[in-house]
Image 1 (cartoon, rainbow, N blue to C red):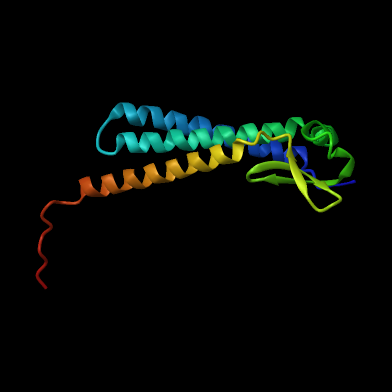
Image 2 (image 1 turned 90 degrees about the vertical axis):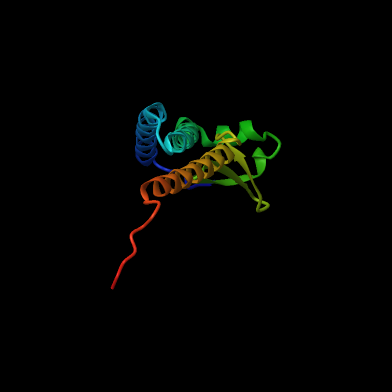
Length: 152
């Protein structure tokens, strides 16, 4: 069987970066909501949604990391009836995934919970949407109501 499993060091680096990012976004988001003002809820909500996406990413990466030494076991646990046909593995960092490839050309997921990618996607979309709303609110409140007419 061939394996394209990632090394532990890149996984650990991604886990640390994503975890620090999540803590930073929570540290920004909660006080932003508490301060109030125009766009505060949108800014804070965007940060918290981004933090949740980062936490889901960390969860997926930790699942990959914990399973690194037992890839074959993860494939067997995920689908015992297809395990005899497994010819290799493929790994994805974004979204985190471990696919067990079968000799017939198909594959099935193992190790990483199936809800990780949808949670990451939905949270990222919510974060971007709220960030755009916060940006629009900021522009609306900082532009003067009656712009000066320029005379050239």
